Amino acid sequence: MTFRKKGSKNPPLLSLEFILQNHADFVACVGMFFVLGLMFEGTAEVSIVFITLQHGVTFPAVEAEAEAETEAERATAPKFLYHYGAKDLATVFFYTLVAIIIHATIQEYVLDRINRRMQFPKQRQGKFYESGQFSVFFLVSCIWGTFILVSENCLSDLTVLWKAHTHNMMTFQVKFFYISQLAYWFHAFPELLFQRSRPQELSQQAVYVGLHLFHIAGAYLLYLNHLGLLLLMMHYFVEFLSHSCDLFYFSDEKFQKEFSLWAIVFILGRLVTLIVSLITAGFQLAGGQNGNSDDSAEDVNVLAAKIAVLSSSCSIQAYVTWNLFNVQLQRWMEEDAPLQAPSVKKKRIKGRFCRKGMENGVATSNRLLDSPQMRKEKSS
Image 1 (spheres, rainbow, N blue to C red):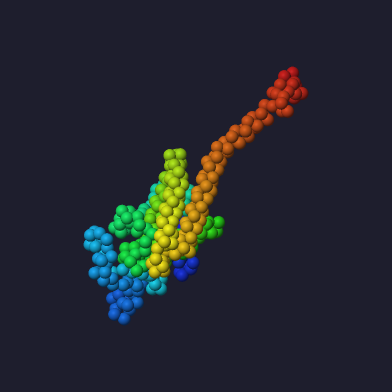
Image 2: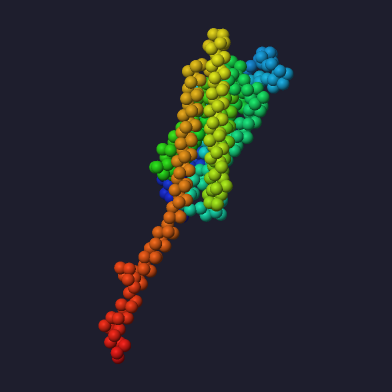
């Protein structure tokens, strides 16, 4: 994403330039309409659909405690669960507006100030803004997702990863996390226009955003909430290290060698992601084949879904790893270019020096002294 530079003159009102420069203000006004709608009885019901989570189901406390296996699970058994539905699209739309506002706030009050202080060249400003935005998002998502994994007992009981929640439901924090993730990645599409991405970067950015949307939506719709959450945390942690290293590299190129080890962590993270996907899907495959037919019919983790999860997980890991190699090769070429330029310059200077004192390999100083003009000057 390239740097959105404001011109010295104010653009015409309602022109494309005016909209691009003030898009966050327009989006904030649209979001305020939904918030103000809560104040009036006639519009409160419509605003609630956009602002709050929908498709909630009251779960009986007795049944929730009966299905809990331990005392800790009985104490924390959810009494109100959620499933997905068509109204989630309205909620995703509203939080997409919120993501656009937060994106503009971070860029204006944090990244722009750092850019003015560091004075990055124009060719690096776009990458700096992109890495800065993604670093903040991945860091917040990792902290938030880890808190959910701990509170949902996913790390202490790994069987939760391949078991759907009671009656294919999800808790409030899990659903709100997925809604927020979908909203953020949906907001990335209009940001490609707002940030004036170059045509050669547009397709690559669109594929990157589309892959995240595809996998997050797949985990959300198939009720693979905990498995998808764990895989997202591993993926986001590696991406956070990647973009953080880019920020250090942009600030000073001497960090290139010290922070090149992130590539090893990057590859290890991809391998761990594939291993977790294979283990969880493999265990559930074996359980689904040996289990009862009623349980298999009620479980959304059917054979086709598991194969789709494994194939999609392998495809995105291969795609991201291929991008890693391309970026690393491009950096190596950029590092070799300055080393070759001085050698060419020295050769040219050396050639000029030789032409002044030499001609076809013979010194010209004595020939100039023996010329007829110099002889006349000496005789006079």
